[in-house]
Length: 179
Image: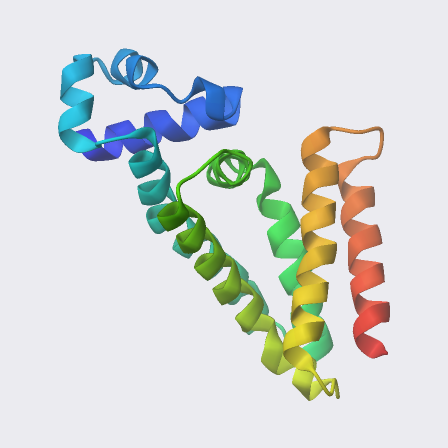
């Protein structure tokens, strides 16, 4: 339970203040634990980040997969893939992952994040192949680039409404995957 409370506090700190806010004293304060107790659960800030990725990314990916499975055509799967990822932008777990990806991490943590993103991209490869793409993996990586750019735009809180950004990303994705 303490480990879960620490991870929940880490999510909050990351979504509220970015990576600078994720400190062991802040984790201790949020959870009511002594600072030394935090070290019993995690050896470093990078260890907290790695565990958040291991716990949160599969949940996020499962939500994207479920949205795609509910779609009745490859084109609708592409739309669901884009829409669901962008709908998750306001979610605390997603905000934590975005903050994490912007931080300075050790090689192990970076590799875990890369692998998780690779799994997300792999979800859409079959649909892109069904749409006739000769190189569906490349198309999937480019499609994820559209999603990533839209995520950054939404996270910046720029002048556009998040729904307008989502619609523009979906339109670009669908026009692109139609070839």
